[in-house]
Image (cartoon, rainbow, N blue to C red; front, side):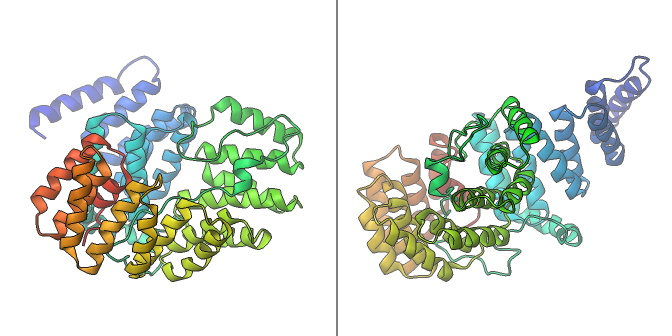
Length: 447
């Protein structure tokens, strides 16, 4: 920073500090920002913290406290502040970007990518998309700088990375983005009996609109009036999950599980808690939770599928085959189960079984995913020529498909043509910025 710029910042800071009127939330944030620009991080933190103490309902104050805490190495405070900002104002792309940097700083790579792609999905800003993609492309270098300073703090961190923290080796070349967990079938078709007028609509999908604060306040009030009613607590657990308050949702859900609720309700709550742990990246707890649900309802295909997701998240690809095969046996017409089973075979290097399943899915609604994985089948075998031919044919037939472009980029990269591959990825990002295969390719899974 030039001397002139430094002088101007200090002038503005002194003006703010000496102002006669009482500070409001804006002045607290402005002073914190000026200290940040001057490199005085401890002073910036102090002012942002004062802002949250005096204006605890201001999401911006919590956001800035979280952002500066990350850069100052106070990761626990950063996490709590950013979660509080989300709780107050719901989904915010900028908060997810900060959570991306926070998770990466402590070595939680897969969770950092999850937050990055959520930020992309939340925002229509082309500039933000490019910013996040650029950050993803540079993160392998960033982690070298930040990892050492984070190691001593990592033991107390409650989020567990799906590969780096579990002792598992990195997944092989074909490691694909597994479809996320699904709440058990009961949670999609039959809600708890809401005798207190607290019916829940929706399935817990990330595509749903976050409930507003009035909904949550209404349900909290109902629980205060009827604290021993399991259905009321189950509804609160679900709404907290929808509001991204995962830790609190887990606590409320545990109350339901220990309350003597009926089996159906306990299975449903187990599924919500499982989804919370998955969002937090805590694969070990997610696995234990869904295993308990499977014991309660062993013939539920969605529970078996969720167990497979949890096992895969921990790098236990062979173990995941057992519940996946069980899920496909219980629901043989489910294309998603077939697709995920093909992914598991790819993880294990069984490209013949994977190819058989994927060819059967080309005529379904999962055509794009099936074709992408089919290209990976040939690349994993080392048959780059066949994989490239398949990708070129699909791109010719569907030139505006982002997934087809990513598949072709993947094949070109394996064929030693990185410049052409990069051009295709850029075009894919312009067509469909939130495409999950684009995210996978940019997320460092390439060999």
